[in-house]
Image (cartoon, rainbow, N blue to C red; front, side):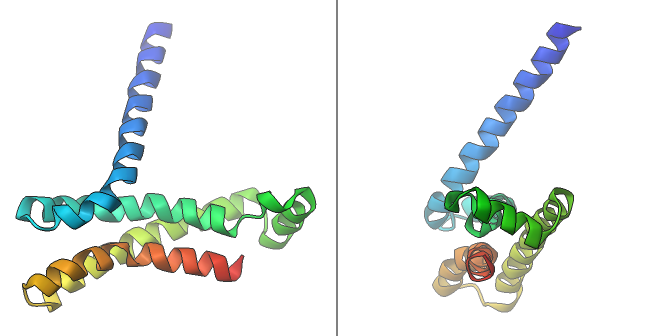
Length: 141
């Protein structure tokens, strides 16, 4: 019984490590991947999930006050609600970034004629919700 549990934990940990590594590498590899049709498909399908991962991290860390001390954190927690409410907002923000990233990619695919310009616009469209998340979190703090 313990062996099965440990094996399942190890498998999930390895999957988590692989997904985090991909989330770190894909934003930098996107520039080279969009030059080939297969790489562009990888960016098209995996890019929004990377945006969702980074947007939840950016939303939590950029808007957080943990580096300003305990009193600032307590004031922030009182102002922004309970842990459950903040977790629900973070999750909603993550899935909104995922949806808007796919929407931006579909907009480039359907409304921009195939060209070198479209190839350069595609990564910008993919990662635009992440930029919006960082700006929104920094402004709202």
